[in-house]
Image (cartoon, one colour):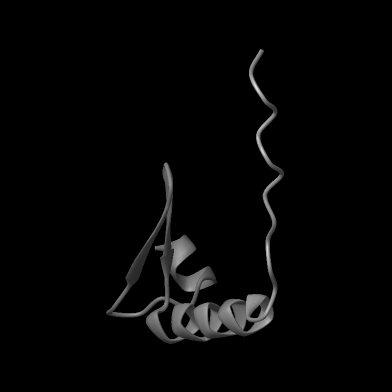
Length: 55
């Protein structure tokens, strides 16, 4: 209960999976966090280095 109060979680909770971990969020805060994250990375490009040739 103490953690729910700290996270401002009421009657509803949102479950967010991150690989082998998960987080519980207050639904409106998760929605705002997701929107902010998407805005921040929008337009960024990620480049992968080409694989080294095998000998």
